[in-house]
Amino acid sequence: MRLILRETALAFRRAPLLSALSVTTIAFSLFVFGLFGLVAVNLRRTIGTVAERVEIVAYLKRGTPIETITMAARDIEAFPEVEAVEHVSEAQALIRARAELREFQDIFQDLEANPLPASLDIRLRPEARNAEAAESVATRLQAFAFVEDVRFGRDWVEKLDRLRAIAGAVGFVIGAAFALVAVIIIGTTIRMAVLQRSREIAIMRLVGATDGFIRSPFLLEGLVKGLLGGGVALGLSYGAWALIDTYLIRAEFFTAPQAALGIAVGGLIGLFGSLFSVGRHLRHV
Image 1 (cartoon, rainbow, N blue to C red):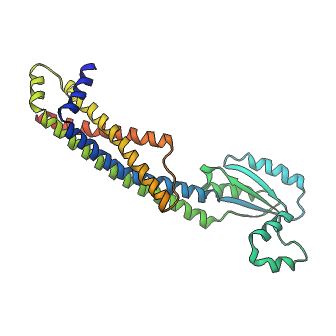
Image 2 (image 1 turned 45 degrees about the horizontal axis):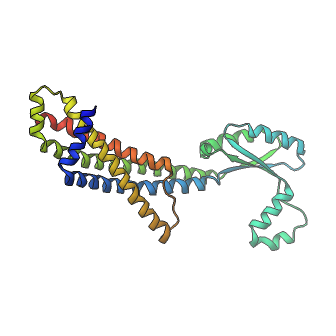
Image 3 (image 1 turned 90 degrees about the vertical axis):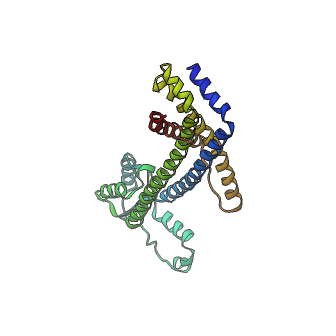
């Protein structure tokens, strides 16, 4: 292991310019990947913020005893999809309508009686904010005898589901494309290193070195270059985010785990790029 580490360090010393060029090339390819990651993260958070508005409203029949409503609210809170249940009385519904629908203030002032029904506002858990889960909960709510109507904006929630699916599919395809480009770039730089040391590799084979022993320094070199490139790309992404956040629009940066994962992905891409390149070209040396 010590010999492999030494050979990896010597590879950087033998060709510092090539190593720096490799790390820079990897960094910029991963930087593009990082910019796309920032877009994906902010898009996902935006969709998540919109999804927080997904809720189910069960309108209650007039005259339903408060005890019945309280017991039903406890039962509904026990649903696996439900995060919280809020009882909105008829008076509270009118106050809320007056606050949110200011354009109808004249109508509200002329009311002789409150026309708005009481309701149960059901907030869903984050993983259940989709059309299928909302439909399932709404069906169960309709089984309560005191529930007059159930609404959750089916068309709007279905559109949100389609948007999530499209964003996920596009993110996967573009992310995979950028990752493939990074693998090809890293593989090319490792291939250059293999060709540069072809005579040394031939001598090592003559003295009995196995392909696994010869391959190990190149794999470690690819891993190190991928990690360094990932770190540089993260720094460039932070600079780009700071400019965008300051001068264009408010945006979120990667969390610490996401940043660490990005650097680790850079290392893995470097490792797989080296593995692909060495496995393909070592036998021709």
